[in-house]
Image (cartoon, rainbow, N blue to C red; front, top):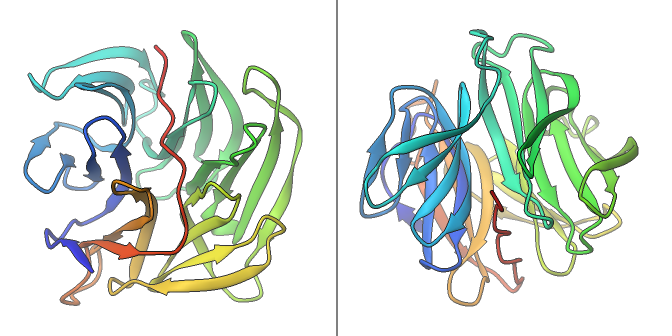
Length: 273
């Protein structure tokens, strides 16, 4: 079950690269991009990525979206991201079916309402939703016309329709309300059948919900602070999940896990720059 025993302070952003057949993830507080075989150190917070080609990723940091060369370790800024706001950093993010990239920001100290959710598409960075405290659960239904996102502090995962270019249309609506259970939705991903997999911070699990939002089952994660899931492996049936050790001292906290499932994930979408 343990995929990598490195104890990340804030593991996040797992990404299965479909060409390299390799899992990437971040330790936000450690300012690192990691694989099981190597890691890259940054001088600021980094949190999420999308794949551009075999050797480069679009990496979200506290101040920019940058093209990162996995061969040379060099970064080239694609667009600033709240670069003039020292309060915030990037958090959860994922590429969308149209080749855009959604990225959430939040306060470094989780300041209420300090964050936003943005989308980069064809050279434009546009703020989609403001007044977000802890941006999370950015993921895309396999129909190509539906996005989800969350402000973890609200205990709700929202969904919104997308137009042909992938921009939100209409007002977001509640897809999952986890208030009664007291669950805190962190990262999320859809599988190929439209089931949503929600890592739930502090609950040591990834929960599965069907396309109508009904609970199906949950996968236990040894690390208490499960932070973000991703599908990968040769047949996309392996469920990976990052965790966070920050504030905890358990032996399994902060590690990255891999679980076999009967579900099949989606291939991660490519970011088109």
